[in-house]
Amino acid sequence: MNQCQEPGEQQEEEVTQMVCEEGDLKDGQMREVAVEEQNVLLVRTKGQYSAVGSRCSHYNAPLIKGALVGERVRCPFHGASFNVKTGDIEEYPGLDCLPCYKVKHVYRDQHLMPINIHLGITPVLNSFVISGPAALVCAETLRQHCYQGRIIMVTKDSLPPFDKPKLSKALNVDSSGILLRSSDFYQQYGIEVWTQKEVVSVNPADKAVKLNDGTLQHYDQLLISTGSRPLSCPGSDLAGVKLLQSYEDAKEIHSSGLGQKAVVIGASFIGMEVASYLSDKATSVAVVGSSRYPYERSLGPEIVASFKMLEEQNVKFYMNDAVTEIKGENGKVKGVLLKSGKVLEADVVIRIVEALPLTLFCQFMRTNIPDIFSAGDVASFPLTIRGDQRVNVGHWQMSQSHGRVAALNMLNKPTKIESVPFFWTVLLGKSIRYTGYGEGYTEIIFKGKVEERKFLAFYIKDEVVVAVASLMFDPVVSRVAELMAIGQIITKAQAQADDLSWLQM
Image 1 (cartoon, rainbow, N blue to C red):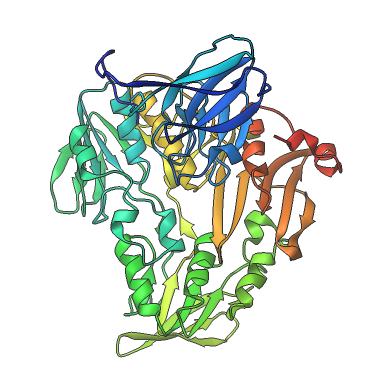
Image 2 (cartoon, rainbow, N blue to C red; image 1 turned 90 degrees about the vertical axis):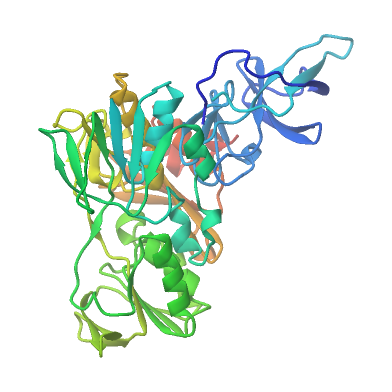
């Protein structure tokens, strides 16, 4: 976060260290250097040197392995982007900017160039009622732009905003390892967090929301980012049936799955991650999905490597099928009945079903109701890279981007959503990354071999690349995301060519 500060508030020690010669880096190149035991990313763009922190503020990934395009470096793992001149975070996930350092040229016989470092640098850092996963970024953006009014975040969770994508990958994670901000942070920036509360109705005429405890709260502007609600299923109220939404849900799934027969309903990314996690902990794991293969709708039928990875861990798949009823005995789950007639034994059932997003179309994340904005799964919006096609993208990174754009428009700073969708999934330690928007693609061009679990997939529509997925091909997806972000068209011919030098760093 960039704090709204008065100039000259802090005095910091300066350390100067010579790190390279003037000609050592060419335009578009990066180097990680150590200055006083602190790693710094040194970058040359348009003949100018700049220096920022070397690690992504999301999961601490080394940015030297990322993609540098123009004045932005994108994390190779999860797609966060940073301005190499200012350190500002310009694409999510992640919340904090990078520390930014001074670079000074000193011309001598060898044209050596030292870099000046400020040790201990901190990144340059009416009421709103906010609910949901985009809330934190929205609230932080308001404070970054010096908004001084009251900010309230309402969440039905027992925890303040946390890193939800971690839950399905590590169900037994400690709560301290997933909190996005500490309690001290909220206190420092005057952000009220109301946990275990839920907005049950909105009265736009009175500008008030009603909470599940019956209280009313008035607002000047409201952000709705409540996510999706699950589809119902007969028997879903039985003991042993779990729905992965909260931190407590994840802990319960972990404990109830140990040494038990587990059935995962839904072969989505989250469902597959849960199955992967339980594969060496449960007695048996079965996955039920409605498509022919996991990920078929998003990644295509050819990418079945992940499917086989889990089969090798004794995970059984029941595809082209669906659960019609969850069966129980004495109030406890005993099995699931499939549409095909099969009955699967189960001690625990994890529902990762397709959700029903209550979508609101938003220009500038603003709904058609005055002073009400929406973000995340509930919002459909014009996607820049697809010619402002109306889309609904339920990615964590997009939700955070929505929160930022909503805040700026709340402050009467008209801002469009221009983010490029980027997501990732992890199965048995292997990461599949994806960027773009592939809906309606007509062809996939592969590099590498899917069966060897090392591939790059270009999704083609109307002779251009509309999305890219990869396994063990980093940082190609990050680089493509940056090219898409600057409006560069990648043609089918480029994807087909044996020469992929246009993707080289």
